[in-house]
Length: 133
Image (cartoon, rainbow, N blue to C red; front, side):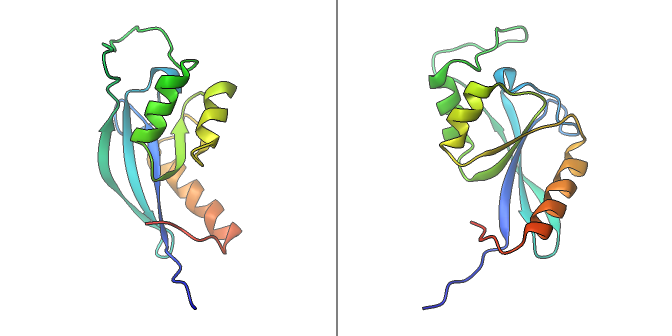
């Protein structure tokens, strides 16, 4: 029995402007979902995912919710299917919760394009991974 190797994966980037990774996980309500094709080293914006917590109004200076396991889990469910999560900062508790969903959390303040290039570089060097579509 042979299995086909998928050559794509998704990255979720926390960004208010769509250019730079600029949001702390505990304040992020907008993620740019990027589909990466490792074979030809291309990527494209698939969608913008807004995280609207049920029954919660999230505004500008709302307190960090990163220690609220329910909200971290809700975010993980909304971003399901992404392999990498790019954020400007994330604490150890939400990282542990997100690890259960197989997210690789990367802290950065790079432009999204630059960060995705670095991920592709890394994935190309590691090689042999099976990617999900």
